[in-house]
Image 1 (cartoon, rainbow, N blue to C red):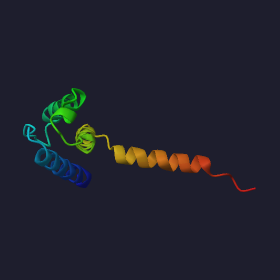
Image 2: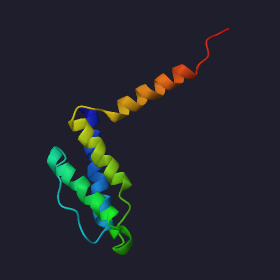
Image 3: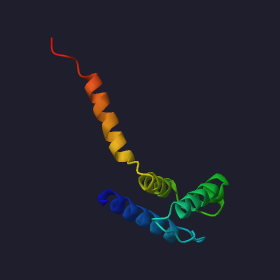
Image 4: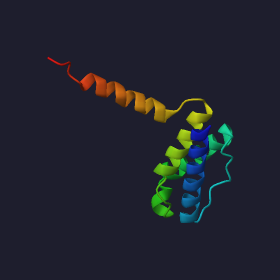
Length: 100
């Protein structure tokens, strides 16, 4: 649960940073609600893909989108951080040569 709290706090911070930097505010979110987070991710992605970032001076959204995705994965009981750590450990053990 500590990881979930950490990720949700990070999401709240990124959400605030993004909203402070834009004139068109994002809708409120619920960090425990998958549907709310999916709507937010779709909204941010649409803004970015429609080129509104350039025309409306929107802030970069990559950190916010990453925070939303991380939270969604944790709500689905998948911790990407653990998965990345395991992958790095496996790659590290593959790169080690056995002693001669």
